[in-house]
Length: 325
Ligand code: FA5
View 1 (cartoon, rainbow, N blue to C red):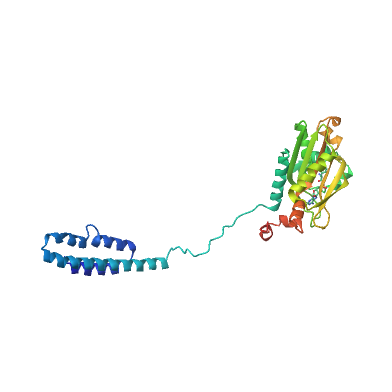
View 2 (tube, rainbow, N blue to C red):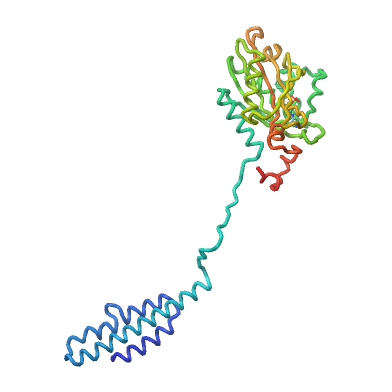
């Protein structure tokens, strides 16, 4: 085949090619090691010098021409492929991945657990569904005692004496029945009350119970632990006050209020020295042991810490609210 024919056909085929693969196949067929034009160039060595010169320069010209048409066609197909189908736009802004974050209650619960474990407290957990024995009787609140009215209770229909725990205190006796002092525990958990709700009262909320029992434990020990705990959450800029309180299972009893930056006082926890009747219910000899106990409302801590107007928002599942944390 002569050079001109090869060139003419090659150019026609290249122009008809529709994909980069087609082009590559054509390049191999024409200019490859065994390609048509390569063969012609190889066969030149058998010719006379004069012919060799003439055909040689023709063949080289043809090779250049074909190469440049191949390149043009390649650019054209590439830009066509980028314009349709898949392509990478390196200037496009990155896509933001949605990331979850801890619910503010989970966050404060975790900080609380971290603080108390660092003080070598053990974390124990109790059941949400309790018996009235552990929720009340064992805590020195017998059936007809008026103090039962302090805790408006969700009773379970069809289960005698079963209720949703109104506080985390039932775990005090459950734990002491099994263990001998000394010990330090906290009991984080969900609690329930059948009461009217408002900005600082929810029917479902979280408490963390604390219980420390040893041979000689006093109120100063309690105050020191609670002050350090509150500092670990709030830093230095909170005010706290201790008031005398009343709980059947502690004597004496206290309540602690907090406020931030001149705001309103908010009760955050109840506490006191463990009542001898509670030690008795657990099978201890009361005069051998002393202890303090407290129950802190985690929702209230969250309310103060994040300046939330209404703790019911914490249970709304509203992502516009939750995404702020
Ligand atoms: C108790 O529940 C006692 N068990 C606390 C206690 C434990 C006293 C150990 C002595 C020894 P009280 O009902 O006051 O006490 O609740 C304790 C804390 O839970 C309150 O200070 C408050 O922070 C929180 N709390 C109580 N009711 C609600 C509610 N409806 N919504 C949100 N937080 C609440």
